[in-house]
Picture 1: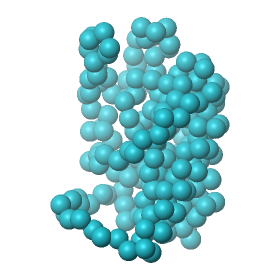
Picture 2: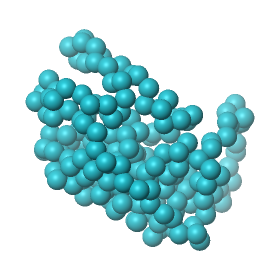
Picture 3: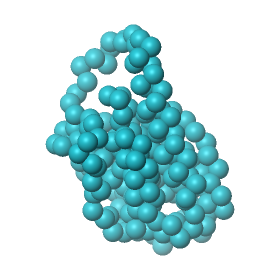
Length: 200
């Protein structure tokens, strides 16, 4: 069962996937350091908790979006422009708030779908396809798709992957801790949320 812990999640701008996968370190509760050299580098066979560590798995082709769906500026090129308005506070009217509310509800729908279908044996690539189709059916563009070249429609971070993991063909296992980032673009605005849970 996936137990959801929702939190507001801001997509971190990445200049390239190689930089996104650069060396990171985390400190465990027992104060030992662990390093992840790359998201898809082969690790030791098992973690301290007996769960098999991640190994490289196939990343399938990028999914398409129907031409009638409105795309964010980066959708075709993958280039994300620097935001020169980071210190500017925008005051939104009722119409803008309505559009943001719709985008947020659509993103939450996608997250609920991802969490509901996640189970042992299911791959994160399967989940990506399911959520992609649901978002497209709702008239939304999956925000992660081609953001700085990101190849998938959601982010799926399993176990030692810290964040923004790329869905692949690895089947989920009992005991995996999985985070899904589901974001979408609809009505000219983005809706974004994340859920974390454990397969038990």
